[in-house]
Image (cartoon, rainbow, N blue to C red; front, side, top):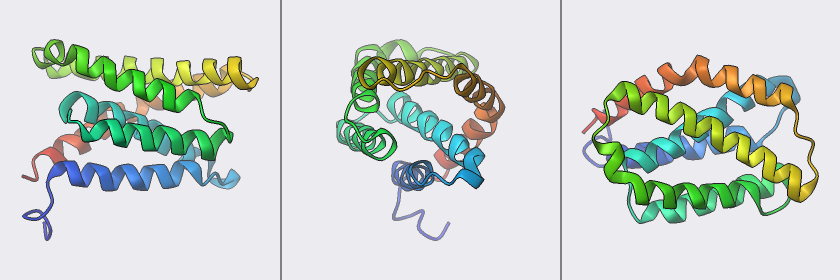
Length: 163
């Protein structure tokens, strides 16, 4: 790649994260499926960075994206920010456990964490801000998560090999 000697894979992930964030917060009704896919991929990338690229800068990244998603999507500070900050602390506490797992188990763990994170965000938004917990939306996110898990993680593995 042209910039591969200047940028590491962590920088590429941050560029992708910014792109996914932009696609997620610019809700266009005609392209709601793109918004849903970018929202799911954003969560996969957040979790992937926490598992494989843990560093102190992730606290700031998780904070900014959690705050940004809260402000742009629900106009309140709460669910995304709280869940992301708890998630980064969870990754810090359990990073030794994840290092010894096989890739297949890591895929399953990433999927489970992503589904739990989205579920918690929806529940917290329901409790704090009285947003309706729509089972249809969660089921749609659940199905989309299964569909794009492997292609997303395949793309991430290709980005990891840039260095």
